[in-house]
Image (cartoon, rainbow over all chains, first blue to last red; front, side, top):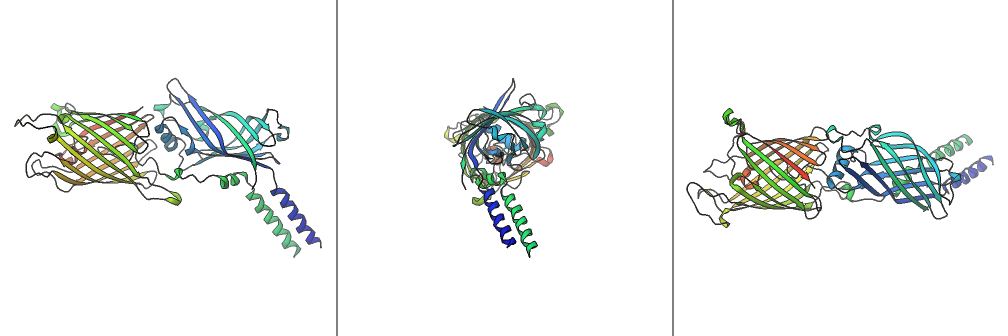
Length: 181
Length: 288
């Protein structure tokens, strides 16, 4: 009898954990910008995947590097071939937790997101401030942060050192919608 | 019995938890993007060395190319090992679309104008619609405008034209190694001696070996099947280095041909690479 109870409780519990409230986007936007007196470099990616588990405040983001669009095709090719090596490391990912997610409401507020950012195969613990708005229909996450290229093993050759900033500003704008599976 | 059930429960909950990883959920939800399976950057430039590679300019991209070939290295000190004598080609190449490039150029050697069209027919792909190699087609017309000095022959514009058709077939075997095979047909409206062929068939081989992220070593060879006997024509052989510096690709070349257009370096080349008839040269390109 006890065993049957155990199984019943187990089934109930797993049902509870799978019935989580999740919010997802498949067309989040991530942009980065580098500005030097010689050259401005800008790239947009509008196919960013991001998910928030509203019951736990956990968050994950997946960015396909080849989906970054540059104004110059040659720049895009060099970005994928020489800098982020997209064939070897096709994705940049973030996996972490929104600190004090219960404080997020339909009024814009700032919360910290803490987790592991992986770019170019290098993982680094990162904390990012972002603006959150949560309604019944959506969770909006907007913000920016700085990526130091050397931290992620992305080398800038000496000849173009004056064309590319060492610290790149990354903007993100993610509108998550309720996700049912 | 009870213990086994507990173990099964714990194990399966661990398994359920692993499936709950949010990044795995994102992986499942990721759209299957076909274009990401296209193999890019088989070669760095639109040229392997002298000849074209399968690479095209992108849509609305304009490239300005300056190429130099100096004289033969074995011409000695009085000619500064060939540097006194140069053939310069200026060219503009423009992407009409991502797959179609048009180009015009002018070489100082024989004051030749040339123009070409290159179209990317098939791309190399990975993934479920994989295809093992890429195919581009190339066609060009060249007009020699230098007049014959000896003997003086009056030629019409038509008589000074040559045509080239190529099928470029290339495969990127790995990040480091790409190979291209180039069946070529050349037709010349005028030949020097009547026994020389008007039409010449050749097979080109080109490769690149990447030695660092921005530097690659290239080799190129054109095997001509019916060469002009009157000038003792030789097959074209070239070696070079590609160096990529941001907006441009810089190529340093050692070639047994002084010319940079197909009809000349494949069909009218007389240098013997192994006897020192080597021309040093470079291609610089800037993309706008």
